[in-house]
Image 1: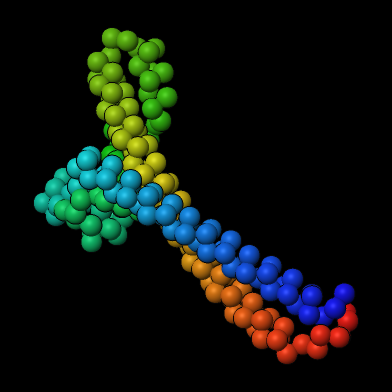
Image 2 (image 1 turned 180 degrees about the vertical axis):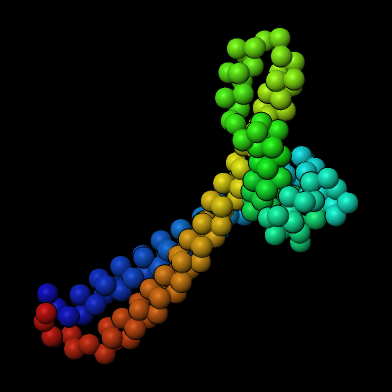
Length: 181
């Protein structure tokens, strides 16, 4: 095979890979933007706010070293995780005495006349449900961040491949047409 033929083939592969990396980067960037927008819009609709300094749950923020969020609306996945674990998680653990919903529910079914335990089951169920929904927002927000990092990586790979392709084009122009590999 002639050297110029190999160089031309490799240059076309470089162009193709550059295009693939760019398309993948754009796709990942769109995924990041979509995920972030969806998480934010869903959290805005829920109107969840961190407790203020005068709020009852503020002590949970102090214990978690998250007082910078006091009074702020939960708008991102990472904020949803903090609220879910450091506010709701702490409160439901206190209500249930550290037991899971399944454990107190089973105890409530064993003692159906115990209204205090039935109320405890309802509170923990509601808390665990809201906590799960907020942790889903966190998970989707985290996937969006991974897509952002992937997009950055794809754009860097496209830039590197473009540079390599341009060096290949320069080499193609200088290569001896009679040389064989």
